[in-house]
Length: 496
Ligand SMILES: [Zn+2]
Image 1 (tube, rainbow, N blue to C red):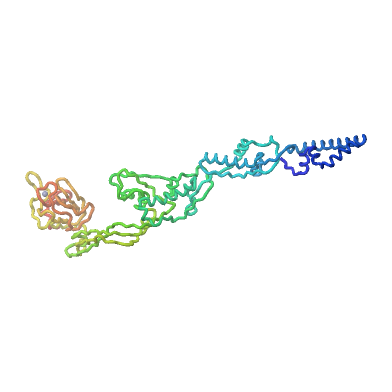
Image 2: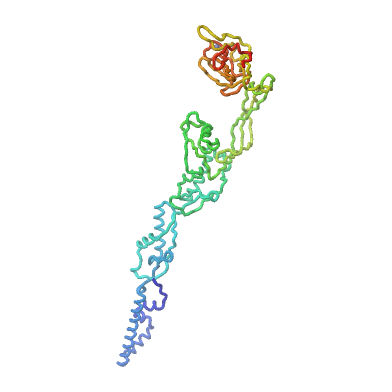
């Protein structure tokens, strides 16, 4: 469409002739009228000729104008709706544009459940139009709808300048950050908390987003805390501890703890679900809090060194006991793991009691067979000898001494059995090398374990009456390549 800029002509041709006459001063009109009456016939004819000429000229001009300016004839004020330089339609009331746009915006907001921003610029500029050119409100609505470009407005959470997620509203973004912080303080008494801070700089800003990019608040919270979307769970079985689970999955204990802040490591139960994905949170939350609690205080160990014992042997004369103090401290935890503790005050409730231990000063002998057997239970007497016995065969010799007496290894070697063994009761086997082994049965207590290397004379057990036994004694066997030999022939001798 062309724009016309001929205000004068337009004004002329929008007035009819009556209007022109109306605008003539009253006096002059009367004069003309009077003149008309008094004029002779020829003059009248001349006047008529002039009038008709004017009329014809006017008509010619008007029809010419109509041919070239057809659109503007009978046109009245209107507004052309323009979108980026492109004319869309015309309306009479410019307010319709804003009204229709906000109607469209509302509809889309409802449809996508998000804030919408119309991206293209619409304007209403003054123009002229005939009635039939004017778009109805309904037409305007569908014209705008088909021409509209829009984007969804959402809110991004930026951590140290990096966009970690987008949610629908600013409120959701704020709540997500609060939830992340609260996650790390959920198990604490709120009154104890002095400060909660994130190490990182967190900012929320409005962004244009696509539908698929927008997360729910809970998804965002989860993502910020874990740093990953994946999940891997473990169901606690009988005998599991945090330590064994962490070890099994190649995690450190701290990693398992921080993956499971909601559960207490000391109170896991069969069937509990633990997270195995080590969180790499986008934020590090530091919680500083004042804690007042009863704590055990450690005891000291006092050593009493004697010459008749080896320095790897020890006897506890008095067991130590922890003391108890009420300690007030300032504790700082990062992501649930304690990183510092500052004691503010300590009220001693009970003092610790030191442990007293007797130990030796001598270096122990080599932990291997010497080829010589000593008496494993000095001061005992032989209550039953090796060999045939009441229709059976006695595989060793019984050495009687009071219950609880120390049994020593007859020679150095490696413990190959330590535990319950049927009629032997609690039993220890030691391999001395060179095909020789010794066996110690009916023990009440065992001090060694399988695989342990012992030196000659090492106290390995105490006399008891466990298994098939009629009273406290040591059943002592010596075996050569697995076959029993008479122990009395080997004690106090060089056997190899
Ligand atoms: Zn026996």
